[in-house]
Length: 314
Image (cartoon, rainbow, N blue to C red; front, side, top):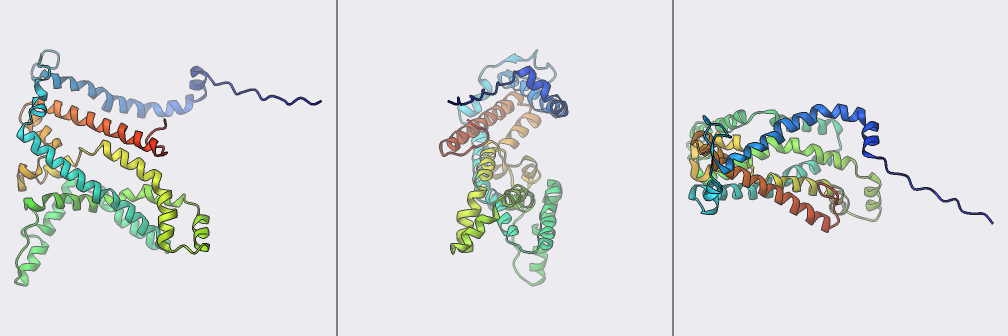
């Protein structure tokens, strides 16, 4: 009678053996790890000034402890802070509704082009705005939509009434959203186009044989293939949801005033760097970061409940 041979379970390597095995990869990763530690983790220690009456000429160690006093603008509902929070939430909602889906729609449109040459030309043109600084982007919009810009000069030449877009507080949030879409949508399509290229073409062929239209193929094949990357990017976007564009806003804040343009990032800058309230600015920035971490962890937990991998596995 033949006895079945039992396969011995593979022994898990110890930490030392794994480090020795992957030593080459770890050596290549060391410069990147060092930069992350130096510029991302070490500065986190500076958040201690949120609990101090920080004075730059005294330094962190010599400054007196103030406890939770710097957080009073949050707990007591300081009007300036609430105004900044309101504008931040408005821009976050606008960006979540219009900015986040824009690269998905554009990637689907580019993927539907049959000519590879036209697709490459379109991608090259759409990528260009991403490499422009916000100074150039804001200047371009002012030259096109400003009071003496191309649009209003055209309207004046045809005896038509001009349109006040740049400097109009009622249109400021819409203007910011449109600027982000124009600048970053093309570049953000890269990940979605890469995900589209990984979808098996046989799935489309099978759907076509079954009589599925282009719209049904999009709904039942394309979007499920993009679901993982969409969920991953949306979770990461939630972590950065309270950051709505400091440089873009600070360049245009003087034209419309702080009532509609003040967000949490500019509030930290105006009160900390310009106003000297370093502790209050650090407290607001610390709370903003903690809220972002909570949003990421919560969204990732929800993704696990629905069977998605999320940012990290369980």
